[in-house]
Length: 374
Ligand SMILES: *[C@@H]1O[C@H](CO)[C@@H](O)[C@H](O)[C@H]1NC(C)=O
Image (cartoon, rainbow, N blue to C red; front, side, top):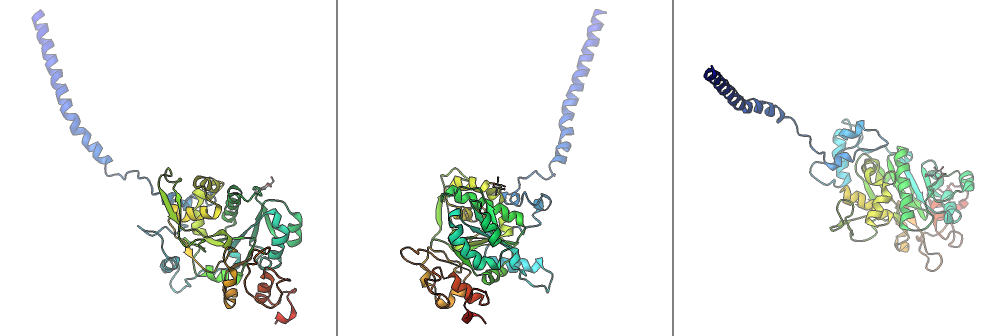
């Protein structure tokens, strides 16, 4: 009895051992099929950084995810000559037979004029009398102080940025940041920034921008140097490597297409512009160039049609002055630096030459001398 009990126990033990061995053998053969069903599924891939850039707070995320409202960058390369991109895009963006050019209206352009309270009287008055009077609705004056008189009398769009009036990097970047946000809000096709000492020849600006598409990546301006600037890379890396990039000098004015401006959003919108500028420790216009050329890898389209007071403006041939997009003036005190355009007004009457240029472009203006009128 005792022995048979042991015998039964042994058999039970052996049976359970065999069962366990069977299970152990079966488990690996059961598992692989489960694994195999996992494998062919697409791996959750990290999307390339560029795709994330389509995200834009103002647009919602529906169009942003697949980039449908912005033309994606060409596969495998830097975006190149915008003119070439325009032609390439036109081939499938427009139905056959339609015009390949944007039918651009002046109202599609957002013009930001950067100024400071100190210059409201001297500089803004001249602008509101001249070119701004022809583009009142789409020109926005970004300043640092209230001026009810200017707002009411001249009927200008004045935006008090609440930025400091100091001419420091921080204050200038603060204004650029507000300009960017207001442009995004505006829904206009082009962003153009100018200074309060620029004359914008509006028909030429319209013609220039009409040869590009606002849905493409376009950054247009005059490089301030004849070589790219070099800076420590502190946004994408720790600053141990340096990047080289071109930037358009802010004093001559520059333009950015809406398509490109939307991609700048992670580094430019809602105060991010100030953070980016602080990281690389460069002024406002350099920071714009850094975001576009170094981070987004979109090249600046160099143009000689924009002019700042840093150039020798006298050297601009008289016959070509009215063909430019922006003009400037400077140095009344010591060496006068103005465009050589004669007639209409004397240097004493029109030291900046802006009134003279304006009367040559719009002779029917009431304050222009009769002899220039048609
Ligand atoms: C500047 O401050 C005023 C008053 O607080 C405010 O109404 C205005 O929206 C501010 N401007 C900007 C651009 O934030």
